[in-house]
Amino acid sequence: MQTPTLKRIQSIDTFRALTMIAMIFVNDFWTLTGIPYWLQHAEADVDFLGVSDVVFPCFLFILGMAIPFAIQNRLAKGDTHPQILVHIISRSVALIIMGVFTVNVPDINEEATGMSQELFKILMVVAFFLVWNLYPSQEPSPKYLFKGFQVLGVGILIYLAFIFQGNSDGKLVGFETKWWGILGLIGWTYLSCALIYLLAFPKPVVLVIFWAIFSFLPIAGHAGWLKTLWPSGPQDWILATGAFHSFAFMGIMATLLLEWFQAKNRKIQIPSVFTIIGIGLIVIGILLHNFFIISKIQATPTWVFLCSGIAFILYASLFFLLDLQDKGRWFQFIRTAGTSTLTCYVLPYVYYSVVSFIPFGLPSFLTSGGIGLIKSFLFSLLIVGIATLLGRLQVKLKI
Image 1 (cartoon, one colour):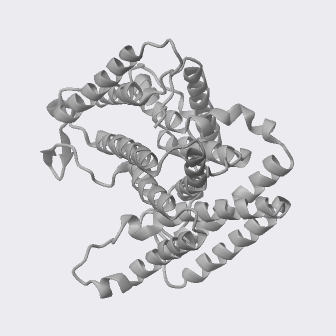
Image 2 (cartoon, helix red, strand yellow):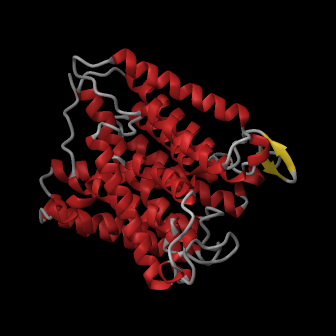
Image 3 (cartoon, rainbow, N blue to C red):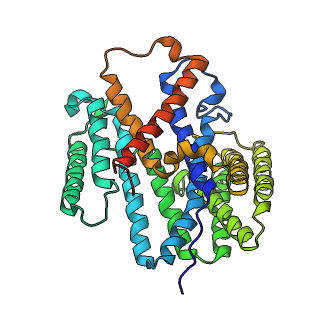
């Protein structure tokens, strides 16, 4: 018997779109001066939650919400578990590869590499598109040409990896995993959580147990309990001691609740229930603040619970507006950021590189204070607009 196809929910795509716009926005802060500290990322040892520190958790939350929809719909279309397993692994590997490239680029030694950082980034992103573009599948289509593009893209990436030389502690090094980069972190988190969901579905009790484990691990890690259990073990048993998995599983739990309320024809209660859950998580975060600082860089449990609570509340607001009040047209102009998310993420690498070749820049009054923030917001919309145009030209990253 086939699994029933889950109906697409507007608020999930819109939350993803808004989160991606926020990510592009805050990632552009490096071009600005004189902006409020509370908008920026807090330093590793500073007990503070900046607005920028909430963006990545929200992205992982919505990633988790999308996992049940993606897997259940593939099952409904007749995909077998091995086919879905291959899909999950291939997506994760692609994200991890992209993450390794993007995290190494800032440390490039241009002289030793024989290439400027700007040209390296342009070739890197071009290769990403050649390999992972969503090529047309309808007949007739030049499939051999598309395969050739993919082979060319793989060749470019191999070449870039081969010639790369970076600076590390005063010496030249090749590619290093370092901290994987944002895309790599997403890839590892997606791999683990999607595999768990695939193996556990349709057993919600098992999923709840994994949610509890991933929510507890950051507390146990930062409290030193894991080190007590295994004194000679690694600093983090899993990536960020489960913090990233916790965000994704918060999203999976949110989707389980959505399914339950919709099955009971009680979706009108979802915004209020999610808001209450969000407040509860924030209260837990405040209580944990008595023992741990708030730090994104350290992935502390206070950061996990505070940001999870914020994500629940933000999603509750969007569900009310879009899925209950049908205000989707308000967000239509940013739709591409929710459907071409990866495209939007990598385009700034090309934009910044191309702009660096222009012999003049923006006047200082456009890159400072409130005016600068408006500039960065308009920049994020520009990136979405470029992604929309590329999509019409059938250029879109899809993994």
